[in-house]
Image 1 (spheres, one colour):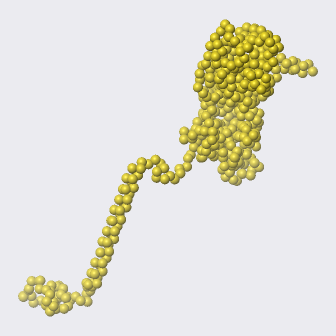
Image 2 (tube, one colour; image 1 turned 180 degrees about the horizontal axis):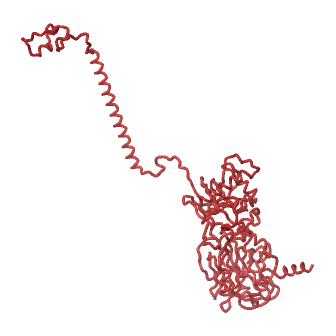
Image 3 (cartoon, rainbow, N blue to C red; image 1 turned 120 degrees about the horizontal axis):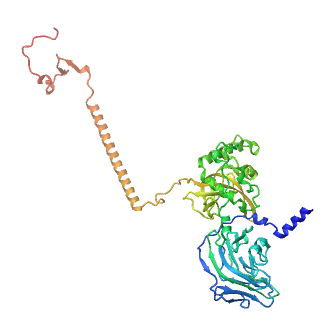
Length: 541
């Protein structure tokens, strides 16, 4: 009973822990032109709108003051709207004990009873510190104990508010009081910044001076004292390699293995607690990106093939033991057994429908940005994988709505990532990889589709036509010559039969035709030979 009373007392003193904020997703800072704006010129309220009866300038300070009742909290509002910014200023509560504050990420809400009242977020100070959702959820963050120790009730307080993405950091007199993330980022909207004069039945006065605004600032705090700045200089570094004395059961490629301790604060099977990426999951997330950068892609693919064989043999009741690896339903297995897959490698192939660049948050590895790709595989059908990659193939053009075929990745399953689609909650396996690989298929193209110079094309076609004409002429001439030779051969064979020994007579070494050559008036071969009157030897010798 005594312990229970002590617990209740501690909760009353310190406030209820922000469980929702601890589970908030990480929305990165927006990108834009960084400008330093002097919101207050020290003399007029130029650039501000509000009730003139409540707001004025005295001694180079903006004064919010009421003597009569203020039924609804009213605000002095900037004419411009802002989302990501750093606001530094000094403020002093002069009269009353009612807090003031800075309103942001919302809108003017005259429907609540005042032309210049506000609906959105409020950073409160002094008296009651904390963060408030005006006309919404009421208290969303408590920091009163720490803030009161650093703040001054009726004196000047130096404040820095750094609002980036869905994150608000609040520095009071050099002390970091709050580092909080909005668990429902859809509530955030670009809006004016407001100085609050709280509803009150008694007179009150609050003053502001030295208001400086920086749009799209660097992700750092500039007003921390030396001790607080030193405490924030070292981001969390987690081990990414399994110690040599610890066994690795799922793969023989130790370079691809990661220690289970890395995932101590990562919830693999709770995609909506938090939705997206939780603040506590950030150190492990960036450690895995660093692991991806350090590991050879071939090692990742080999270990993935090894683990896939194990899942085919043992997972899904062994139904895929004898099947081809390409038909194994990795998406279904990951969403069914996320804790078993966490930290294991996988190779995926498919097409990408969304590819965006994301600025990185604070990390110990110097990572400035990464890519998010929504990849659809053949087995997963309309269910995407969320791929987080350090690099992309330069031929892959980014965009919120793209269609890039033949993309492959080799990486580590990190967790189930919760997201909203068609007013429903869905979970996508998040896979962390070093590079998005693209293997385009060469498509047949027309002659002019590749950008060929028409004049060059005309020359090529002319030369081709001349070549064809010359080849045809050569072929035709050869055909004619061949035909003429054939006809000549036929004539020779018809008029000059081939000789035989039947019409040849042997006359002592000189061949004579069997008929008397003199009888037909032709010269015989014997007439051409010299006479030999003295020859007496007969052929019969």
